[in-house]
Length: 172
Image (cartoon, rainbow, N blue to C red):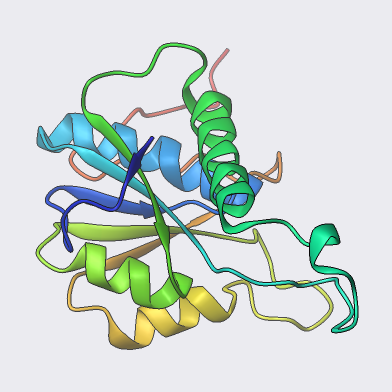
């Protein structure tokens, strides 16, 4: 994993939060990148915080910034392994950056071909399928945004644009 290098990326930028949906977005982006001959930049944004800790909790109980950064790198590495297994091609750059996720993704997407984000397969309990980070990116992105559904086992697999279509017939 590399720390934040440039403020924007070429190719396809993928927001990765460790969810099944973000892993699906990473897989889709890799297939799309192969068709287009462009790199993929997997971005995981993290914010310092003490979520889950009471304000009076001892400082020693709170994770350090280094521990939080390490945890963020683990989330991204795990998602990349889940998406591609142990062998990752040279066309993937993984970036861990501190900051609000929507702002980080929008900054990295500047100049990219597109931004890929995961979403739930269907809105659950009347909640929208796209979360707050996704909605913010959809509102403010200067590049096309693709939302890739989490696998639900029944939905048809999303194919990369420009790939040859496979026709299925009912014939046995």
